[in-house]
Image (cartoon, rainbow, N blue to C red):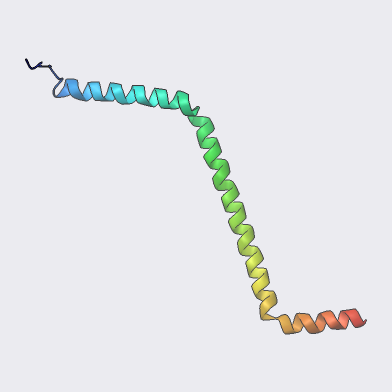
Length: 83
């Protein structure tokens, strides 16, 4: 014999789904830590990424300039060593 279940419909179903989603978020928050700490961690990650990108750009830019004028750097360095 088949069992017949009454499932919530319409507004009651939406309310039930929201309640389930809220409970999942609570469990997930307990499992992963507080939201503030999570945002702080991601902020720290992006700050480090930004600093690394800026320093990389500056370093490569300086090397490109030195590479473009390597003949001048070579001769000026040689003159300074002789003096």
